Length: 101
Image (cartoon, rainbow, N blue to C red; front, top):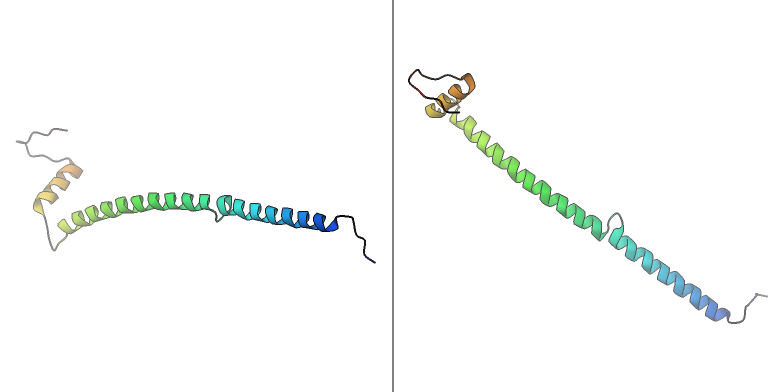
């Protein structure tokens, strides 16, 4: 014999309704605030944009340095650049030059 309560069917229906409502609420919260939720996705996309901008800046700096290295290499020697760098690094100047810093 099973124990039954009056209105047991209504009690079971209410229990399942609250269970389903709780599960929907839990999964909805997880979809927005969870480790793999929308908030985390927005945060990762912002980080990706920042890193892409930094990468572009680094690539530009690398290209600039590669250009200077190529212009100072044995294959292609830019005498004006060599003179400029030597004067800048060594602090040399001819006697007839005026230096403005």
